[in-house]
Length: 115
Length: 111
Image 1 (tube, each protein chain N blue to C red):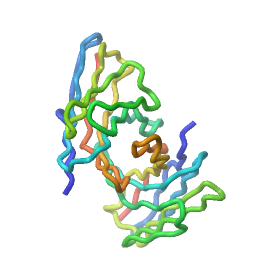
Image 2 (image 1 turned 90 degrees about the horizontal axis):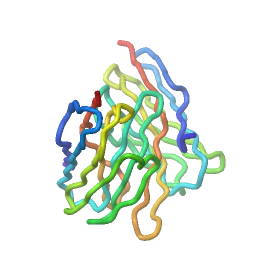
Image 3 (image 1 turned 90 degrees about the vertical axis):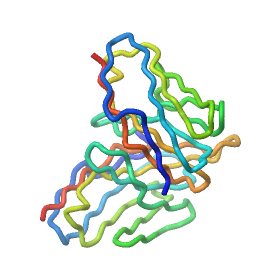
């Protein structure tokens, strides 16, 4: 199964509400990242949290990381219709053997924000 | 801003054809990646490269090969396209910060 698994698979909320997405993973990581993908497009990097960090903020985004539980959550506060997209977590296992390593993506959470 | 471009947004090929997907990045990144994205399966890593002429297999390399002759360019090759390779193909690059910058994707249909 995937290293990163998001929960829930789909989330529908009203504009102004908060959206919380969770990610679980199985092996040790260097860092964990969250990405957004609008329909039919490439992914856009949102935020990175290192394995020695517990919480990180960026604008309306708040990410937490619990390495003991191998889980992370992404909170989007005061959501907007423009936040409608798929959100993916990605764990990074590098650097390994002189290269930067690689990441493993989860299946994603599809967020719909209704105006 | 980092820019990652892919040679085609949409591509239709026939079974058995050799297919080349090109990816170019303009930020002098060492690391480049090829993923495929399928509904319900998320993104799966096909191959990655951390230097010119270096390549590493990802999770699903079968049926694919890659080439990296120049630092800015990473090519994915389908030696003999099959219908199960119909997918969205995404290229990404990263430098020392681990943040991956993605291209717009190539939606490949093999008939």
